[in-house]
Image (cartoon, rainbow, N blue to C red):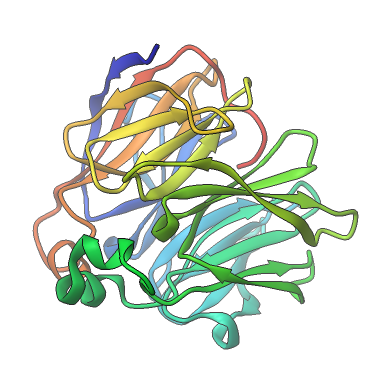
Length: 298
């Protein structure tokens, strides 16, 4: 049985919101085409610009000292914002990115797991359509890069089909990543040195290109469906147990709020950068209370 929820709009006027994170009582998020990392209050008020990122921000995460890691997409870098606000280079991923760097999760010890597009998705879809994703050989695959807390490359996991939203279980033992172009959630064991092993399918989805994801206290994963106005709650094995309906396509989601059980959804009319990058500010943050609180990281 699938539980249905309907989201309401909390905030309008974004260009394209991504990587929502609940941190210290506020929702943090990147906006690709306003080129900034922002935060807002639980109710959608009091939006504040934390830092401008000319290279287009995406994945966010916090280090043990309170500093923030920020993916800078178009120049394939991970930046570090220290607690005093200074920005420095944490890692250059240019050798491992097929196209723009993208989402990221940061473990408790500061180990970071960073994905990238692997190819120009808008150009591919314009030429091949969604059916091109489903028809072999499909789009090119790429790497998931594991970075040490110091920013050194620990591991490069290849043959990833657009590694996107990523979570770590609360015991730190398992990483789950959305492989957008394989329409699945893929799990790995996290070894003591932060590297990944034992790759396996967590959930195969039907026509759901998994975009941003988050984890709840029951071990289920909320998945933004990049083809539809919805986020889906997915159990290991693929059963869909709940759905949040949004007003436009959902590209990322995060559990937060005072009790951790509000699902914040980043929505937009499209992800095509030629449209949302230059057009009116139509992206939104929507929310629904879903009952089961957040868990793990981010």
